[in-house]
Every structure is written in C-alpha cells, then in structure tokens.
Amino acid sequence: MHPSRHALLASPFLAAAAAPVDLALVLAVDVSASVDFDEFGLMAGGYAAAFRDADVVARATAGAAGAIAAALLYWAGPSARDLAVPWARIEDATSAEAFAAAIEAAPRMLRPGATALGEALIAAAALAVRCPFPTQRRVIDVSGDGPANAGIPAAAGRDAAAALGLTVNALAIAQDEPDLAEYYAAEVITGPGAFVLGAATYEDFGAAIRRKLLRELGGALIS
Image (cartoon, rainbow, N blue to C red; front, side, top):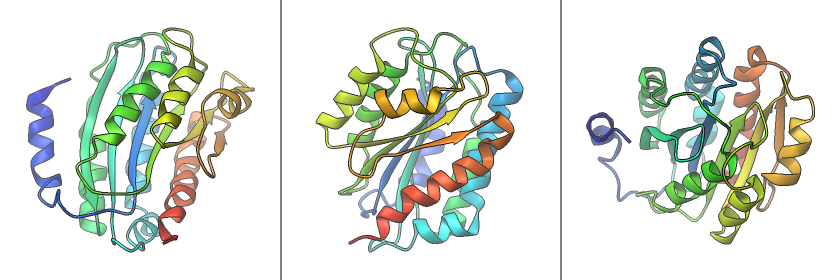
C-alpha cells in the first residue's frame, strides 16, 4: 500500500463518511503480467468513462440513500495488491466525476506478476466489510483476463466472500481465454443474483463494464 497517496485521495471522499449508501462496490481489477500497458489503459479508461456516464450516475443515485460507495483495488500475484482509489461516496455527477478522475490518476504501482485470483477475492472481501459508509449491500466487481495460476484457488476466495454475505460478480475478458466466462461462473461468482458478463477483447471492455455497472446498480433500487 502507499499511505501518502491514499491519504491525499481519501480526504475529500470521506467527508461524509457517516452518511449511508445503497451499495458498497469494490472494483477488483486484474493487473497481472497478462495485462499489457495498452490493455491496462483500456480498463482504467473504461471504468472512468462508466462513472461519467449519465445513466450510471442516475442509477447509482436512485436508491433510498441516494448514493453508492466505491473503491478500486488493483491485484496481481500473491500478496500483490494496491488500493488504487479508496472508498468514495458517489451521490451526484460531481462526486462521480471525482471518482472517475481518481481512477485515471491512479498509477499502476504493482509489478506485473501471476494471477492470484483467490487471494484477490479475499482482499476485496476484507475491503468490502471495512467500507466506512453504512450499507446493507456489498458487492465485489472482479474483472480479469485469465484463471488463477498462483496462490489459493479462486473458489476458496469466493467461499470466503460468501461467508461474509457478499455478492461477487465478474467480467471475463476472453481475448486469450475463450472459456473464461464459464470458469468465472463455476469458480468465482457467488451471492443472490450473481452474474458473469463477457468482453470478447479489451477494446470491448468499456462497453461491457458500463453494462455490468448498470446491472449491479439496479439492485440498489430495490428497497
């Protein structure tokens, strides 16, 4: 972790830390060695564009609390994780823009390595339960381009998240792994309404993550 950078980012986002939210959403993003520089840019740009999308902002702010909380976690090999953007309360277009800008400004601090998906899910679950904004709904949104190849099995991380009452949804980038969506469905997702969406290539990621966020945020409208 990088405390000075996180302290700088956290101060405006946590100003309303006592205010409740309809959803705490952890964006857990694969930055392992299989993700090159251009592909990383397409993912980060896709997330930022999604939080600038008027439909995403409208759905994020349409629940009873009028807001969601989100945080961005980068992950790669065993013990390789970085809280790239800390918890933010997204309550309007201005706060959504601030979150999008923070995503764009967050550097890729981790050294590319293996794909420790199981450990990433455990780290994301720990982050979800530490959300400073009161909520009854916590979701991990994991995206990646390959199966676990290091650390604990993905299913062990999934089971840890399930034991905490969390939902895990997934976005499978099938560019080099045509069967990745099936793997995520069997080994990664969990919880009520859990789902996998696919992106055929990294060029499709931006549109796919927008669709995924709209589907996830729809649950916040249910009282």
